[in-house]
Image (cartoon, rainbow, N blue to C red; front, side, top):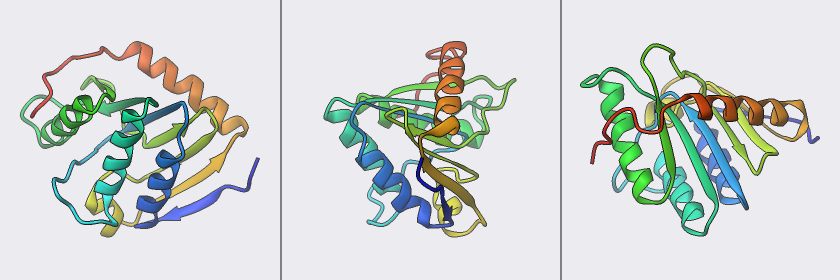
Length: 165
């Protein structure tokens, strides 16, 4: 296993972009908040959004588990919009229920490359907040994330809410 790398603040955009862009078989993500920014400039969260759609378009299986707040709440609108955009790009998205909060922020690519930390996928998380994540390859972290993601994926309903356009 390579030495894990610390990812601080806006470094997340490049780390996630490179992680996603190198996917060959599968990307699995658990995210509390994921914002979709129409027309956002390069070097921002939207780069990661575009990269995720691109890998899905070339046949990589992409599964995303988002938190779902009660309808009408701000996070429900943010994640609902993102879900709609992702599903139109061929990404599988499930939104976890409101009783059990899906607050984790983790990525697993091809069962080996991982990124875990405090960063949501939002401009605030990458430019304003004091956020910290760790990226690595293989080891017990990859095996544990794979098993944990599969358990969450199996237990979350496929479509508990309508996606927002």
